[in-house]
Length: 116
Image 1 (cartoon, rainbow, N blue to C red):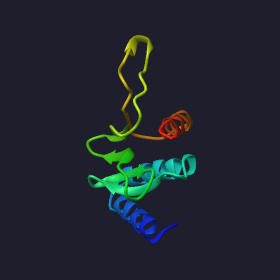
Image 2 (image 1 turned 90 degrees about the horizontal axis):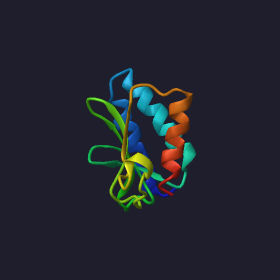
Image 3 (image 1 turned 30 degrees about the horizontal axis):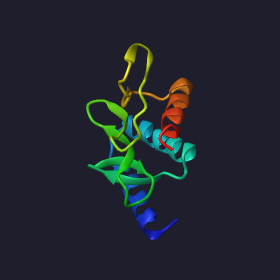
């Protein structure tokens, strides 16, 4: 890991540590899931929140936000993949959650791996 990657990771972990419980634990859990599912994505701060990109200096692909609701989102830099079915040409781009159970963890892994 380069020193820039290490610095960015430290900033992400610091950001997570500043969050209030119980969200801090949930965001830490999702961070750990993302890093394990896609170790090639580099953690960094993007618009003040944890995010994950192909490199330390490229735009984020996945963001993890702690706003009024926790949300995992794909940025506009992800290749467009139409949802199809009843959603037609729309691209799924954000998922809201409060806790991470087995089903949610599995879906987060699928979403994160879809950007690679």
